[in-house]
Length: 100
Image 1 (cartoon, rainbow, N blue to C red):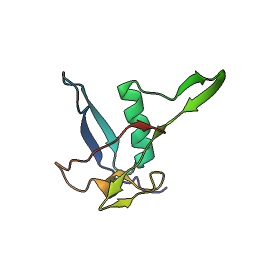
Image 2 (cartoon, rainbow, N blue to C red):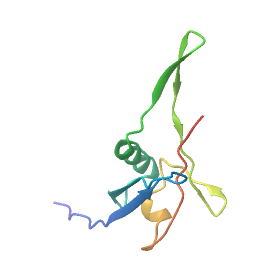
Image 3 (cartoon, rainbow, N blue to C red):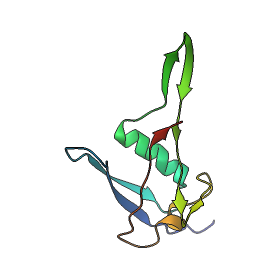
């Protein structure tokens, strides 16, 4: 039987910027989760989802655009792990939730 891997549990305080009243959530995610998985967790806890709307009589699907950049380099969100981006306690980063 293979030994269990010890994993760190990361805790984040997520705060929405540019709001008159504070809107925030505290979440915990395993260190080996991908950035895409973190994105899905954020969507869930913030109550965001894929939106289907009608435009010119036809249904159009809008999905949030997820882009992570580190040192002016765009990361592959399906492969990059949280511990690659957040390497120490107190690290701050910006998550931009936008539609494309």
